[in-house]
Length: 152
Image (cartoon, rainbow, N blue to C red; front, side):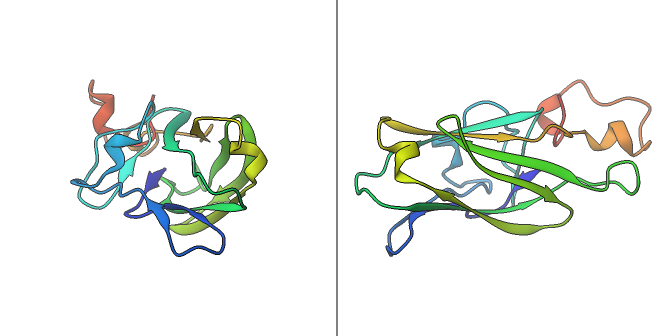
């Protein structure tokens, strides 16, 4: 799975939004925790079955939404779809099956974030696979997993 340029976390009716830029030179390094490769020019790949972000908690109570522009690594019949589950502070907010570059939106109820100092976001992608593991393009994957999208 790769996150594109500008996913955002915003109040449903507000003009203000926290925009996390996952491109090289973007601000995602402030928020990325485990499960991420280094940013590339247009996106950042996830690594392994789970990736985490930590966002500041908004101060204004209300209904929020998380908007994600992302794309899966898929490979013909061997890997036609990637599953993605999203949780905030251990509360499930979305479950998706992704087949193409797409935008998804998840409602984030105030109850999920009201009692926490930070917003802990977990992306679970259980079907994660590295391209070299499913494409047959190389006899083995490089030893540097940070360069390989969706790998262990």
